Each structure stands twice: as structure tokens, then as C-alpha cells.
Amino acid sequence: MKKLLTIALCAALSLNVMAAKPKKEKVNPNSPVFTTIKELPITSIKNQNRSGTCWAYSTLSFFESEILKKSGKTYNLCEMFVCSKDYMDRAIVKVRMHGDAQFSQGGAAEDVLSTMKLYGICPEEAMPLPGTPQGDSLANFNEFFNAMEPYVDAVAKSTAKKISNQWKSGLQGILDAYLGKVPEKFTYEGKEYTPKSFCQSLGLDLNDYVSITSYTHHPFYTAFPVEVQDNWRQGMSYNVPIDEMMQIIDNAIENGYTVAWGGDVSEEGFTRNGLALAYDDNGVRDLAGSDQARWLKMTAAAKKNVIDSLGVAAPEIVPTQEMRQERFDNWQLTDDHGMHIYGVAKDQFGKEYYMVKNSWGETGKYNGIWYMSKTFIKLNTMDFMINKNAIPAEIRKKLGI
Image (cartoon, rainbow, N blue to C red; front, side, top):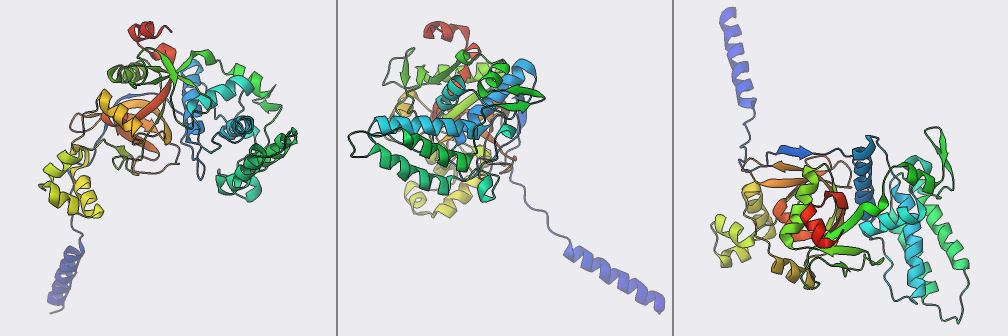
């Protein structure tokens, strides 16, 4: 009897275990599975936190990879050094223009290049961490710009017949308080530097770097300043046809050069989970088995479920030169983010993507890395900075560089 009770108890326990065993989740065959084709060295993922400084993070990351390529040495260059110098320069322009110029957190790759040429650069550890006086080691520009913008506006829109130079000292005090004081000299790896001598020690030729874009409102193979507010320094970009723009990026990666990319990530195809696709809305609707009327009536959540289920099998549009121009002119294509392209991968269906380093910390499915389809980049690129030696010889000849 005791033996029978033991057997019955074991059987009951076994049934309970079987009942408690979780069901296997259904795997979506369209969820991305990436295979790396080419990956170039990059430095660690950074976090711009609550600041509109992607331009500084992405471009300094690009220069850090340039140094890695040249010397194999790893540096962590200081974004707040660039911001301090750049915001002062930008304020001076606004005052000279009597307020008729934008003063904001945003910027462009040209700001970093110009700052390094004019003032040099320092390593991260040579300046106090941003926000240190507020007890935060990450950049937080909310209070900072709330204090700084009215100050600059007050000077720029003054009704005085003559202003003094003291406003610069006041502004520098705000910059130092929130960003940390820029060092005149510092010691790095046992050697004393100024920001200019440190920049020179990095082995970069800052004249090697150019910007590329692709629009039809200026002639191809000429240079012009892309007409966006954050290009306040009027940095020049070489204008090439759309296919040559993509050829330049591919040639760069193939030959060991990375790319400082600026473009539009406001489209719904740019997910917050490490994937970017240029969705063809009509194609997605058709694959979902919905006519246009039904699709338009669906909630945003229902549409998202459809798109998520399609995953990397979701159809993409075919970007054209005319489409890029139209999107630029009607404000669809904006320069709202800067990132760092450093590799190429493909998904399980053979579609190719650029591997792109972001500056939002180790977030998303790929810990701070985004896989952005080549179609997305072709459609949404505003401009990008690159080493001129990464440009194919035949295109360089057309550009005269």
C-alpha cells in the first residue's frame, strides 16, 4: 500500500511539472538575424543623455576610428570641450547678426572639424564630467539651455548703440558651470599638452575630411552649404548623384574607412530597438491583406503589430533622386540625428544593412548599435563626413579633390 501511495505521489508530481512547463513562444521567422559582412573598429558606446549633442558624439566617434585606423591607439575624445567652444562661437555669430540667427543645442559634423582646427581637442578625462556640479555625470542640457538662451538673446537683441565685450565672460561662466572648464594645459599618459598640441599628436590631417550630399537644387560635382539651420558655420558639402553617394559609403567601408552620418530618424521605420527600414506603406498594407480604406481605419497599434510581424520582410520603397529632393523641400527629410557608420551586415533574406553606432548608451536590442538598411540610408541621408581618401578615384576626379 505504501509503495502504491509513493507511485501515485510521483505520478501526481510529474503531472504538475508537465502542467507547469511553459509553452514555447512562437518564433517570428521575420525577426532579424544578422550576419556581419564587414566590421571596422570603433570605440565604446557613449551616452549623450539629455542633450542635443549627437553631432559631437558621432563625429568624435568617427575621428576616434580614424585614429584607430592610423595608429591602432584608442582615445576617448571630449564632447563637452567641443560644445563649450562651439556654443561660444555660435553665440558670437548670433550677437553679430543682432539676433537674426539660430542658437540651439544642435550642430553638424562641420562644428567638430572646425573646433578641432581652431582650438584643438582634449581627452575626456582632462575636463570635469558634464553636470558634475549638479551631481550628474551625464550631459543634461535642460537647465543649462534654459539659462543660456535668454542670456544670449538679451545681448543679441539689445537696443544699446554699443555693447561691451563683458557678455562673453558671463557666457563663459555659464559654459564652465555646466560643461566643465576647458583646460589650458593637461597631462595625458605622463606628457603635458595644450588642446592644440594634443590634437596635433593624434596624427590626423584635418584637411583630409570632406562632406558629401546629394540634391538637385545645386549642380552635381560642385560644393554648397546644405541649407539647414544647424549648418550655421556654412560648411560646404560636395554634391553627387544618389547612386554615387551610396557608392562612396560602400567604398569607404570596404577600404577600412568609417562614416560620420547625419540624417533623418524621425520616420516610423527607425525603431527604438536597433532596426531601421524605409517602409513602403502601400506594400506593407498589401502584404497585410488590407485594402486602403481598411488600412487607414486601423489604429496605430494595429498597424505596428502588422509591421512587427513582417519584420525584415517588410517591403521598402525604392528611393530616387527626385524623391530625395521632394522630401528635402517639403521638410520631410530633416537633419535630426548624427550617427557613425562602421560596417555592413545582411539579414536572413540577403538584404544588406549598415552597422551604425548610436550615442544613446547601450540601449536597444543590439546594445547601442543600429542596423539601418541601405535603402533607409539612401532615402534619409542629409549629408555625411568622410576621409577624402575613401572616395572612389573616379568620383574624386569629378569633384576635383
